[in-house]
Image (cartoon, rainbow, N blue to C red; front, side, top):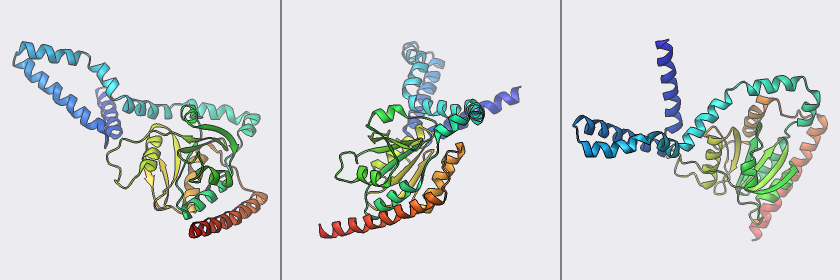
Length: 287
């Protein structure tokens, strides 16, 4: 039991280190640790007045820790929640519920990929959030509610730089665009590259706090990226992005298979996308 106890403590400390690594929380933790060591030295030296003052701070240490490390505690609890058996039990009942499966449907990825290719070619910034298990109501409420079917033309209209909805993120849940102009939390990770702008930092922050997949198109370079669990895969092609989205969605079997009719429709969508891309470039040259 002592060995198991030590291993569990070591595992928890390692997970806490992973959560705090590269963030401001590490510096705060070192400051608290230094203050506590100084308190032990003062108490050992029997400095009554100073030890009394420092003892008052140590007495409220638990509350201070909760306030200072609220984001890290949130990440830790979210990580524990991902490993619970609720999701497996939910999928168990779902397998015996045909109507629920039909109700959920699946994601159609091609319109999103086509829209991202066009925006990448015209250096149009975009931020698209895919979510599987949660509606992200808090973040949906921060933007403008849409609840529309996924369409490449709709995504292009939203992220057009002259559109009032372009500044923010689009959230996609259950094959529908739930909202646009949504505000995402910005990551406080100090280890992120300096060239990351606010759009990439918002994508990283969202992926750190939620189990989502975020697609990013850089406004400066047109580079397409995918962010998940605080990690960014940069400079991806359309095929690579499709693979990343499929891997994320297939974890709950929510990708809609493309039959022959859908393939034909996707080809038409691609032709329209190429025509729109050529028109956008021509308009920019004229301007």
